[in-house]
Image (cartoon, rainbow, N blue to C red; front, side, top):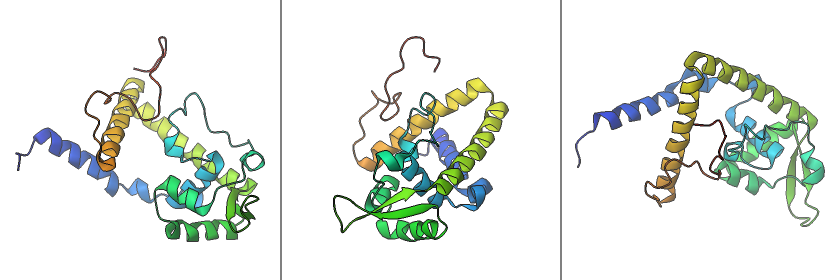
Length: 192
């Protein structure tokens, strides 16, 4: 066993604080985390955390994904959220009972059901996003722009590191500065 590195220990305890934060218990517009994530997946057709280009491509709450996209199967939503389908099924059922999502028959496979977000669901996710952005705008004011950009870059590196660890293929250190699924900024880009 190797010795305890005090810097590593400080990092561990700093990250552990996020699990204890009271802010994690907050329910934006009365919705829990899983409900917000399901609505966001349906809105974007992808997991919102996978959208690494929010700054240049902000969420579009008005586009009607339903018209262009037949919705997502429960198994697709669970895969995007990295949970098992039985975890998401009751969440979807509750959202459907409240008129925030709809079930429709898959036109290509009549045995399958697709889930789509309704206008009411779109309004909830828009309001939750606005609330979250208000909080993060206050965080930027608290930290300052430079520290906020540095924190965002560091958190991307942390995510990349742990994602590689869990995936079982630590790619070494050559890609430590690159966030997943993003392109390297071009000259003139204002990111650090």
